[in-house]
Length: 139
Image (cartoon, rainbow, N blue to C red; front, top):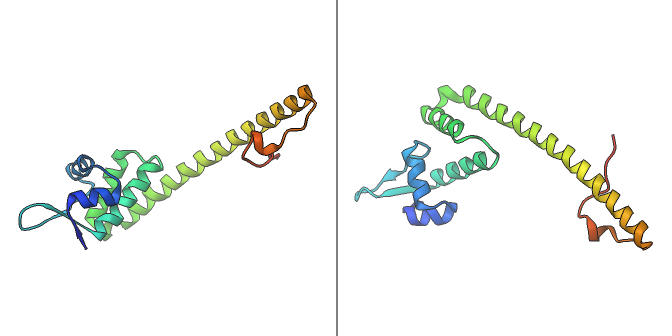
């Protein structure tokens, strides 16, 4: 299916100016119709969703641009693209591990304050009122 820029903008959740910027930066290369208007495909839609995923997971735009250039170069760059994605995955794993450590400490602090409030008011509080997470993990 083919989409004009306005429809493609709605489908992707990206503004028209952002799509033009992505084109200018070489991230996406839409076809042009006989009137020289941008014409996006389902393949472009899938690619934009992937770009958004990379961006949402913290990949810098400079690296996304490099990845896009490699992608445009085709199969000879498969190994390099795989390497980039594995490196990004490792970065995400490190960030997730760090966030989990922070969450454990936050859970512990919430539990501490919950117990203090119970002690001061001598009334047990329902856990759901003060946290939406599991009890602190140890180990």
